[in-house]
Length: 208
Image 1 (cartoon, rainbow, N blue to C red):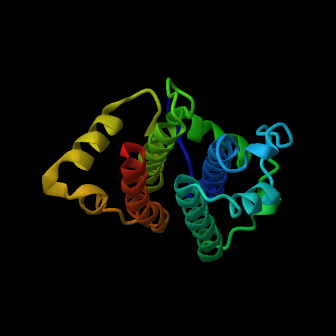
Image 2: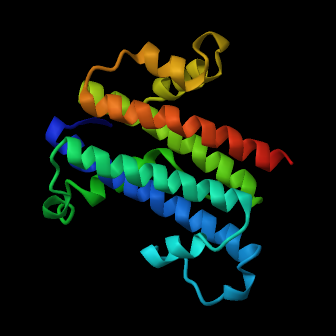
C-alpha cells in the first residue's frame, strides 16, 4: 500500500510517532524496573496506560538499562518539543482527528513489534531501540519524498546494508548518503544518529 502525505500532514503525524515510541519505551522500562529494584510495586502499576507519574517513577530505579531508556525518553521528548517549535505546530488542535494520533500510531506499528519472540528484557530493549532507529529511517524517507510504499521491503534491506556497511560508518554515514533536504527529514535523521549511541550502550549491557 502506497501512502502519500502532504508536508502539513507529516508535521502532525511525526509527533504522534514519537509519542508512541516514548510510550513503548516507558512500558518496557517499567517492565524491567518492576522485575528488579521496584518489584515491591508489582501489581500496583498497570502497563496498559503510561502517565507522567510513571516516567517520574523510573527516576527512582537503579537498573542501568532503565537509566539508559530514561535518557532516550528525555532525548525524544526534547526532539518532539523542538520539532513542534520549529514547525509552529499547534498539536492539540489536530491530535484528536485522524491526521494525528491514528496515522502516527499506524505508521509506528507497521515497523515496530515490541514483543516479537523476545524473552529477556535487556534483549527486548536492544531490539526495540533498533526498530525505532529503523522507523526513523523509514519516516525520514516519507518526509523527504512525501510518499512511501508500506508493502515494499527494499527500504529495510537498504537500511540494513547501509547501517552495517563499514564504508558508511553507521548512522552518520547512512544519513549523509540519504542526502536529506526537507527540514522535517533532516530533523528525523538527526534523531536517528543520536539514537545509535544509546543502542550501542544497550547492546553492551545486554551482552554482560
